[in-house]
Length: 626
Image (cartoon, rainbow, N blue to C red; front, side, top):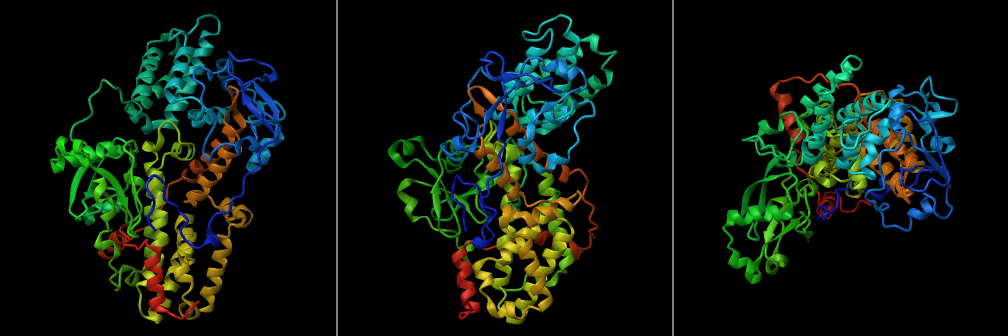
């Protein structure tokens, strides 16, 4: 099915049986909150913390004014407490704890272990006092990963700059060296985490360069922190910070989206991460199905796209003033269409699998119809009938690993929490979710375009084999997508086809269904995943589901306080992604012509995403099946 404009592509497009069930997480009974300086300190308790010192306030879960789920339900889904400018700051005493090499810790209480079962077995820092549940490195990582929920990156860096003696408002005295060491430690961790994302942050890059130059000029740090300063220099050189005054490099390479490949050599290239400033080629169609090709930034707004189309069409200002102004419309293969608002950004990565952009006037909106090529069905043998299951599965895993590696861990936070970067920096995650939907529809498309009963049963057997090999490769994304595709109602109703499947494969598929069963919050899948060692590719939609319930289950801010336990739970989930990618994937893939053909096929799947059309094909194959 096509995806409506402005919505994110769903990774679950199969039968309701395998849609994720809403199971909210168990929230901590007592919310630990960061109390910024300058606000009332009533009911606050200070602890010696291993990173920015975070006084915490305990509020009973579910009581009036608490950060519990009862207050969250009164807000619209995805909404969080409003940000109060000037309230949230780096807390007092943070530089003392940082300079002590992370000694000490924060008591998180029993609630955190309930929120994260893995924390029950996690050892705190050796020097942390009894009862400590979070190490200093972990707490610093929590703040760096999630600070955008309550403090924009530019203001976060400005606060850090102010804490440096000799910087903006930085003080001097006996704590000067300790403060310098703390600022340097936070800045190093920040740069290591953000890396390429800072190329899109002009204002943040300017603050970092100022702070970097200030540290490099400080000779008092050289003899004690020489290694850290050298590391800082290397990170700043690697990050290639973007500053507003600097001009963009000429002749920037245009990157292809995997749905827009036009040449075989493009799809065989190794995937690289997309950034909002990257440029792509895209076709925008007219009501008569003619089109113009424009070159646009990935993060371009609808208004920018229409401006490029208008220029190509030589559309005059007089026509626009007469009420004939162009609008941008998304059109799915099923005929569903929606008008995009001028302020929307990053529309290219949110399009459905077979969706296209149309430019038209409001008078011609009702006459828009899908492109003929999207509803044309030509049954016949494809590469999957000739290729070996092992080759198809290995190329699926290799391609999905490339896409998974391109996702920055902060994209998970921005996608769910609609952070300051918005959809400008979630393009890689959006593309992986689209690929998951594409594989699901690919399974149904191949089976329903296979007309012979015996041949179709053989293909069904091959697809189950491919799912088994993907599971063996620890590619749970491909495994899940294939199983969901086989459970599509248009496929599962093919009784004669399933009856011809050997009993061995029927039992194997039954085990796969049990593994993907959403009962008890996907308990079986989580247990299997916990036993796997990296590298592995998880079922990414389930990670986003967990983050969504963490977000909607408790507030981020409450009366100027920051819910530190919520931030820790979010960061822990993001760190699992880091763990899954901690080792490289090693697959032995040959470079023979046959293998290259299979590789090109896997990366250029031709699918039918119109569920009504899939049902029509299913009833033509087996009219009497139930």
